[in-house]
Structure formats: structure tokens, C-alpha cells
Amino acid sequence: MDDSSSAPDDPRQYSPAAQRNKTPLLEVLRSRLEKGARVLEIASGSGEHLMHFAREMPDNEFIPSDAHPAALASIKAWRDVLQKERPDARLRPPLALEVGQTPWPLSDRIDVMLCFNMIHIAPWQATLDLFAGAAQHLDENGWLLLYGPFSHNGRHQSDSNVAFNQSLKARDSRWGVRDLELEVIPAAREAGLTLAEIIEMPANNLCVRLSRAAER
Image (cartoon, rainbow, N blue to C red; front, side, top):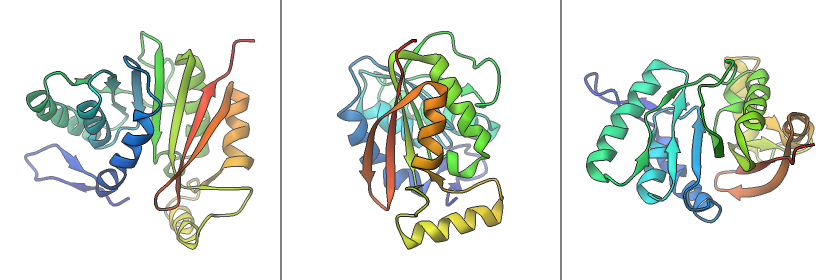
């Protein structure tokens, strides 16, 4: 985690990782989001991703969320900045949401969910809870977009991902780079989500798009 905080009197947090990947992620969303789509981000962290997306795509509604008070304060502060800079941006106040809570604090269906750089720095149960929540709250044509490092069939895609995985497990044995074929896709399918697309991203990362399966 290379995130860094701002001055003590400013609740905004700054994430070098978010600054690096916000443009490639925006391009993924630009080509896939329908006009007017309601987009919920899980574990928004500093809030910089959604601030950037809402600024660049004012036709879409973006809803940030996080479980941590400091993150929620940062998101609110970034939203205040955006409202002054771009009044037409549709960035909603952040929701206090932890994927394991029941029920999620949502009153309307969601068209798209985003979850970036979370599932490898959380226990596996968080991924299962994320998938269950997505299956419950996504519109029938909705989809969930994951972003981060993944392994394929037990093999990491680069030496840097091997080292990253080792560092994660040293910090918490429940963390680690997740395997697409052996873990992520089977768990998603069990929850009612199907693999729609895998998108190659810079720095040995992937976007994994999971679609809500048709009702049985």
C-alpha cells in the first residue's frame, strides 16, 4: 500500500496508485458504461478514482463507499472539491459499507459495481461477500469490474507479482494475489456471476468483468 495522507487539517488522502491507474481505468469504463448508468464503487479508499470518473463522465451517477471513517472523510472532502470544480458531476455522498454487513445500505438497483485493488488485501471471505452482494444488488444486466493483480492456474504473471504476493502474505497470511481460474471465477459462478471479459492492463494487472447471470 503506497497511499499517503495529506496535511493534518485536510482529510483528503492521496494515492499514488490511484493517480497511476485512473486514466487506464477510465478508458475501460468509457467504452463499456451506458449513458445514465448508476455505478457503485466498493472500497473507494481515498475517493480519487470516482472523483476522476465523475469529472470525466457527467452523464453517469457514481456512488462511493468504504468501511473506514478516514476513507469516508477523504471521499467527502474530494467530493466538495469536485462540486466546486464541476457542478454537473454526479458524485453522490459516500456510503458506509462493509461487504460483510447485512443488508447493504442500498435502496435501488445498481447497474455497475467497481472494486479495485481490494480482494488481494482482504481475507478471502471478503471476496465471497462481494460476489454475494453484487449478485443481489446488480440489475439483471449489470456487471462487476475487478481490477488488480491475478494469477492464472496457479502461476503468477511476473516476478514482481510473485514478490508482491509474498509481501502480502508476510503482512497477513489471509491476504494474497487471487487466482482467476482456481478461485475467482468458480466463486463468482457459485454466487451467480459469469465471466464476461478479461482486460489486460498496465503493470501486470487485469480488469475482470463479471456479469450477473440470468435468473433461473
